[in-house]
Image 1: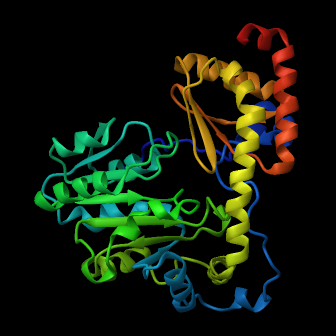
Image 2 (image 1 turned 135 degrees about the vertical axis):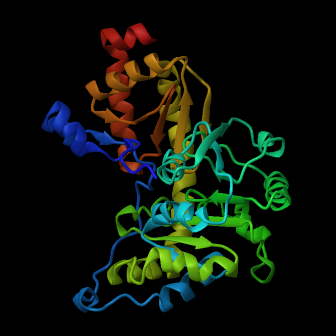
Length: 352
């Protein structure tokens, strides 16, 4: 076990930047975290919820209606489940090779590394069909690349896992705006594959990252052990109540999907041409909640990332890529004006 590793960095980190550059960071337009910038509105809640131990029964019923399948476990965000899977499978695997996407949510690799697994990286899903591994992680759609795979491709990887007595983890944290692409719709609860784990999160589409609620779907073979690993009360009572209310709010969900589509169209028409110029790249992937640009080098990406800070725009920087969360409707004008201001500066004209 290796619990002294340096953890990955994340978006939504304005407190870090405040310490680094000063209080002006708190006034930045923070598009670094790809959670919905028009989140589900939090209602008043009964203060008594803070006095009661959590009971998951109601949320499990509400989640079953929302997902169409009953979750096997509820965790403190899908991150909690990501942390638990290496321990769950540790004693069942003689060899410990885990394949993760080369560009993707870094906590997957980090979680397995902490438990002593060997990490191998893949660029294309087809590589999983020709290699030997014990666990494969697919992020669907990928964060940050936005790559989305079809059912047939995922089924081929699942078949490969079953043939090797291996396991497939499908992380669907960003799937809510397009549930028709969810692997859940291709699976039957009564015949759930032993090799398959599907993870879902409410932090992205609902914009409720602070509630810390996520779900796992897996074979009944693993359900008791996984819940024992997660512990008896992994999610606070107010969070259970709030997420259940969000799942039941069908009117908001329909409005939110319409808003995402309208905001995306506005972003693509007004903002994207300016970012294409600033990034000197039109290699981008558009997702319902974010857009990611692939730049010529890590050095150039860091340079542009820092230049955006000069006009008060904070994005998510990776190795040769920058991810921009889809702004709220009332943030698009602010972003557009900031980018116009950047393009008028000496540095911006140099980029252009």
